[in-house]
Image 1 (cartoon, rainbow, N blue to C red):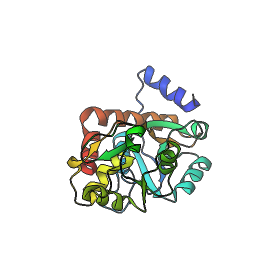
Image 2 (spheres, one colour):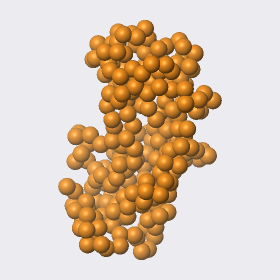
Image 3 (cartoon, rainbow, N blue to C red):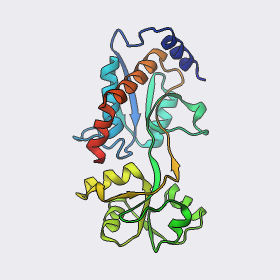
Length: 241
């Protein structure tokens, strides 16, 4: 357990008020990872972008969000005390590199169709064609699973349009990403059928290892409150429904 996690947990256990009494300013770095982070200047900047700003407002933390290429964003947070990174998939390889403040999303890798549910790699292999984003880890994953029916596409927009037109039988992607792309392409996310998850990711608000534990605890509590009062689901619905 990271030291700040221990201190924050102790404060909460003792019933101490972890809201920041004086406004603190921290920088949160990210890259364009739609639908979670899209564009800081857009009307809909992204699910996690909106969640983080609301968390900061509730916790009394002034959060400055800066978009960088994703690899550079990761390196910057590792080297910058009191900086945050969002949303970072929590993996064993990354565990010791960051403090882990709170999970912001848990997207699922699934076969997306418009008719029958495809619930396994074996079932996916039996289809005529499966759209997959070219050159991605998910394409390698399906290759490793023995699927020979892949239809590589260059972007998610093409995948959504091909699935809607019946040119492919399924699209292997994140469930929340598929819903968002359908919506942005003026298609109806209600038409989508999501198969059983093949893997569930854990996307977190992470931090530099020297991050202030009181701020971390306050932000985590803010997100817990947002889940409880419906704010979290309302922000998701803007992008996915």
